[in-house]
Image (cartoon, rainbow, N blue to C red; front, side, top):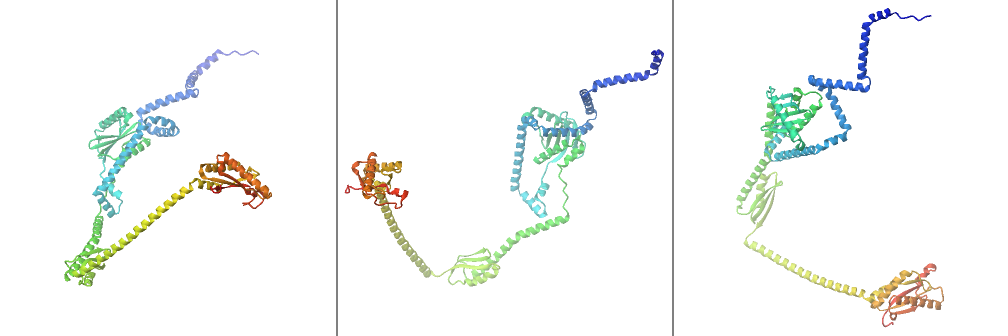
Length: 553
């Protein structure tokens, strides 16, 4: 079987019939190749997408700025916040160069607020207007802070402007009077130029421009990276206004949409005090009544006391004139619920009658009389003589007691002198060589273990050295007495005791004691200090010492 050859006419017919479809297939193939070159893999796709998105954003920034800002601002703000949280070290490195200026500005603002608060506090203590406001607050039963805020003369907000920081383009404006502002473009450009110049010339040393003094008006400036907000006040804004301005700027920036006049109007509400409603007629009547009641309450007690004192003074004057006592020193003291009459009066004065005259006028107070009666000249001289006699007796008794005290003092001084003399003699006697030798002899027994072997050699040689020094310094002679326990017979014990005494004498001579001042004596088992057997019996094997006077030697 032979292969069939293709018909060329059939091929031409196919090409004629499918030529449009072939052209479309070729065009699609070329487009697919172009797409493969641009987005054939992830890297090409990312490059193409970035190029397209960048171009779209540039075009939207020019033609549809507000819509683009409203769409991208939330994402950008969220990204910046998350980046700040996740990259704190980087933020610290970035903010470190301006940290000093930020701290300096914060400290300056804090000191300015402190000075303003101190000035307000001093003015409040010295001003009478504050006391008027306190009275108004007490009468109207409203907080003092509310009354102070109503009476305060706060600066008024004139207008608000929102600008682009770099270009000075006006984004939105607001005026308190609601009228059109023809010079708003000029003012906005001027503010932007001044702010830009300040940022370039002084920002490194002094921070950004925050306030402009325009004479009677002041302009507060707050700026973000792209926005500048200016608030014009008819007066000097205080620190509270500055804090409101800061908070308002943060709210506007965080709103994530373009500024408009409505945003500025809402911002202006933070600086506008609430309208004060006029007081009603009933409130005025209540206020007048409360003022009258307070005045009556304040004057009641002083007026009552003054009338009471006047009644008492009148009754006292009448009673004194009735008994011809005007020349005598009598006076009244009114207080603490009683009327006190004090002074001097003659012996014939009727004080009971005066008390009866004062009681009705002094009610509800009680009447007390502290008046001394004085008789004629003879009686006065008798009293004076009696007083002189009593004074002389007191002086005599005082002199006698003084003499006794001086005698007792002399006896005490004599006793002290005698005690001091006795103490000196006692110290001299105790410090004498003989007394020192006697103390050492009584407190320095030498104990033996066996035969002539010392029980505690080091301690025994220290005692022997001290005794030898005392004998050598002129303390007199020393009797060295040897003892034994009761284990042997009398002759043996006597010889052993004498040998122990001679051994100790030898040690004393070696320590420097003169031999002619030492006497060795053996007393065997006499004067035992321990009656028990065993180890306690070793205390009897000892050598003791006694001072030896010249007669004994």
